[in-house]
Length: 560
Image (cartoon, rainbow, N blue to C red; front, top):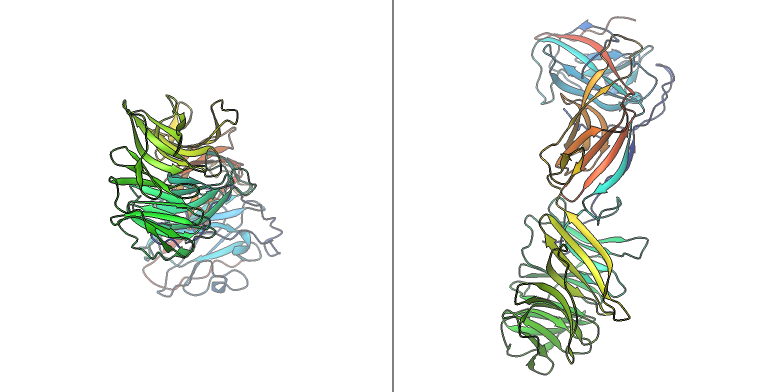
């Protein structure tokens, strides 16, 4: 694979996640299989439904929840603290915590467990606690309580992606910034991009295909490149990042060894089976895919900074002083308007080429030139389009792709000349808005805001086994390296929303209705929105008190 820049396909979260209901058909009967816990994502608190007992703790510990720590009646084995409860409902998932006498959560014992993960006794579900806190330390003596929540038919449904036009489906790569681009014959676009999570990637975008995205290769990169160029031959993709050149197969990104030194490269260009590399020794030509030497352009006419290959033979190059040069059997300077400086060149159809040019007043535009006829056409960005950063032409038509930038926004546009010569038309226009500081402003989602609500108070369903149990709960949006979801304010996980790591910001606001919420999460590339419904189908329960002594064996719970 392309080593430092670009090993594997990025993972994306499902847009629809449902907490399914398990129909619990009797405490001693059979319960259908349900989803297994995906690990804690949070770190509650009400009700009363089961037993209270006193116990001590030996130094021998077993994993809480392991069925081998119970007998067939659900009693805990020696060295374990048995916890039994009757669930207030016929299905859902269970989140259970251990709390000290001051009400602080010291251990997340069960996070979104289905009923069939518990040991089933004749009249209750049971699990065990090993007497340790979340850090793995034995808790001090005192009174502890086990309590939690049954989460029923609560549903999290993917609703929308915001602030990034590239990302409109779960299979789209998480492009945060486009560093370079190249139009391929047929209309596809190859992007050298930085993905969310400090990952570089080559991704191929097919706007007219049912399968629009193909990630050629990805790899971690600690720091973004300051200067990036991309060149494409019939079979290879060549990436130049801050003077270091790498090559890979266009189909799968498999690394291709370069016969020349890959460092201190100034510019690169490719077309068909030809390659041009500009370095300190000059402009050198190679035949692909063998990289067979095809000579060089001799003494350079100026300090060159950009190069493009023409259709049949020859090349054009831009110099640091703004001049543009044609090489065929030797160098000749091409005539351009006196008040224009050429900043970069790119290949076009036949003997035409595209340039990023700067006028005397500093205005930037994209222009098409012919080696024989001079200037052919010019596209000038509108007042609100942003600053033109780069231009890459197509070799099979009169079109180009460009990157524009304005404060907090990057646009990538594909533009072509109309066939009747009547101006320009957009093929596509993709915008990325910086949403790393998203939040809530004026009652709606904003790409940048200091207001970031993360908590929401909801009304719970009544616990039929304990009608006096509290029915008020404050939910909190949480994110860590295992994903995102909802938890209690003291950290007991209740509902998984996604398993996507790398989420740096989450937000929770009221949805349409008392039992609904809108959940937002951002990874630096976009903001995803989920609608959570059914929040009223959560019931609190209490699984009893535990008296921890300095030592001694944990006695079994009272007999039935």
